[in-house]
Image (tube, rainbow, N blue to C red; front, side, top):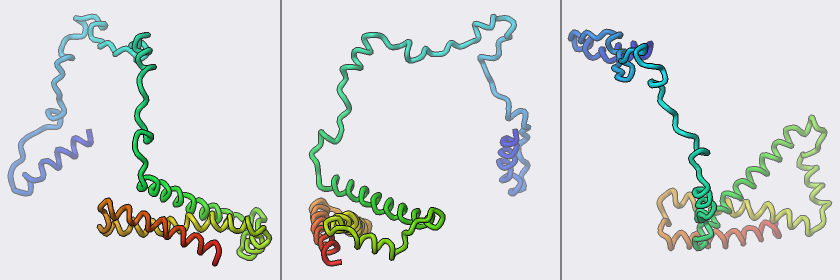
Length: 196
């Protein structure tokens, strides 16, 4: 009822601002609706005639023939029917490396935040001495696990920003920048692994 009152008051404001007399509309007249189904006297008909039957549930509509047809329907086509493309893989790797970098960062920051209460030592000196005690192969695997996602995500983000500025959007340039990102990722990962 309050909504209708506010609506009627606001709809009459242009008349008041123009100095005109608004038409006489009462709230009760505006609130009335014509309902043809409810015009009959309920006492003249039994109540069962006024009740509208609900549709049957889906389980009652199925028959053995329909169930057999549904069992033999082919599955919806998925990515396996399309030829794989470089853009698919790079898009998937961009998302996965972003999740990995973000997840690693949040895990470290969470551990750093609760470390004083848990008695953990996750400061830089402790982590550096822990990594120094690892075998050389484990160090390089760890460096690869950090260097590859960081390098790829960084270079692919630059590629996306180039697209955002409206450059390199035709198919030839998309593939050219994709191969450049892959080459830069290989060089950057090797450099970070062996020279940092």
